[in-house]
Length: 227
Image 1 (cartoon, rainbow, N blue to C red):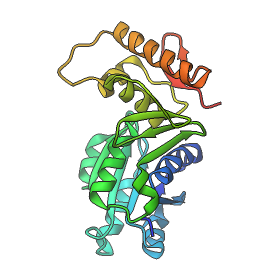
Image 2 (image 1 turned 90 degrees about the horizontal axis):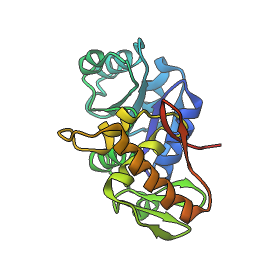
Image 3 (image 1 turned 120 degrees about the vertical axis):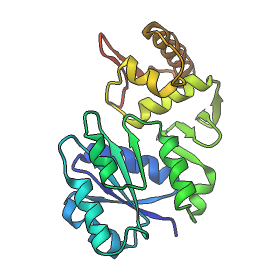
Image 4 (image 1 turned 45 degrees about the horizontal axis):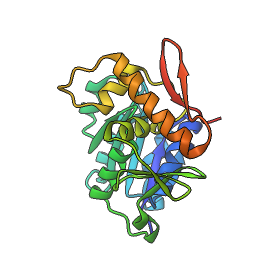
């Protein structure tokens, strides 16, 4: 049976998006919207990991980490923090999580960690495909995008841009956020360079899908059109 992941979040839309990606990779998920029940639910359901949606000013992560320690489960359950913008990163470190990811994040980073940390016994995971839309799939480990089974030729940067946009589908990502995700930390990248690569990505997807997938928000950035 595939591994069960308990996702602690009060954002139903974010849970549905994240659950969709994780199920496509062969995992099962359960939503925990009452944080103080997270550890109990994870223990009762036999979850392999607890994934916490960390919002600014929230004490949820610290409370869960404390509860795991009190129950002696800290070594049995993997605790993962998905850190939203403006969340206090020092609080994340104090919680002694097993791993943290700053949102927005490319989905393959989380999946790669999960596969390495807890594995997945599901045959469903062997395909390594993460469905995005009915006719578009992201091959995480193979770093490919398929539309109706046919590969779409993307550069590594374009692949990372698409992964970032899909990792927080519907939310507008600024050029600065996309630069931080898609380019090496030591690289100097001008905002205009992002526009160029997004333009190439948009054209490639339009040719394959027959419609635009990426939405431009003037003076703010880009988003995947999930409507």
